[in-house]
Image (cartoon, rainbow over all chains, first blue to last red; front, side, top):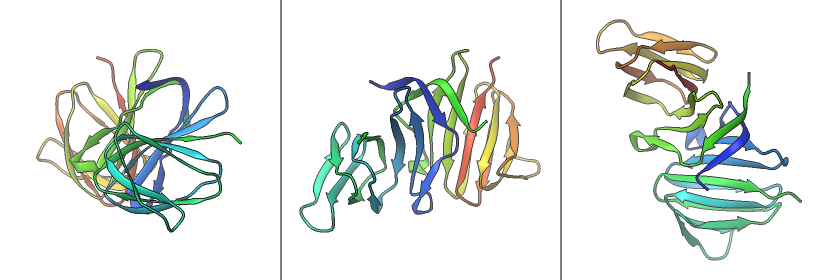
Amino acid sequence: MDQFTNVTVVKKANIYFDGAVTSRTVQFGDGTKKTLGIMLPGEYTFNTGVAEIMEILAGDLQYRVGDSGDWKAVTGGESFQVPSNSAFTMKVATVSDYCCSFLPE
Amino acid sequence: MDQFTNVTVVKKANIYFDGAVTSRTVQFGDGTKKTLGIMLPGEYTFNTGVAEIMEILAGDLQYRVGDSGDWKAVTGGESFQVPSNSAFTMKVATVSDYCCSFLPE
């Protein structure tokens, strides 16, 4: 699916790390939410509330959940899931385009 | 208006200047289109097809249409219009969030 139809888009951007990571919030009729975002090269740590699925639309990065364990490589067309109430770090090698889905509890 | 409802959002980002300017395309039921974008500090020149209204949601920049004439300062809450088939340059001072409306001919 390359577009979302019949959705609500919040105009104001979500801006993190001085603009190196930014996103737009998309709200769906069923009450769920996604963000469509861009990450410039760099290393970023985020905390989750609910679990999230990070779909990488384009770009190359490595991630790991928590602050130990293996770094896993992810590229455009691939996804990874992050548990609720946890931290995950991404080492972004190239400008990366992503879609983050927030999983209802 | 702080959100757009019943719209279609294209998942893939529009990426310019190595990610320094990025946007998402929002399509409306009446066939018109807007983009919601972010500009990092820097200087950027764009060309218009149809006329555009650049609404600055947040941030500070200067712009001018064409390659001569005065630079005009614009900040969050203000807008400027660019004629069709012309070039405009922006000197972006702080991370800027914008909404660009494409005016039907």
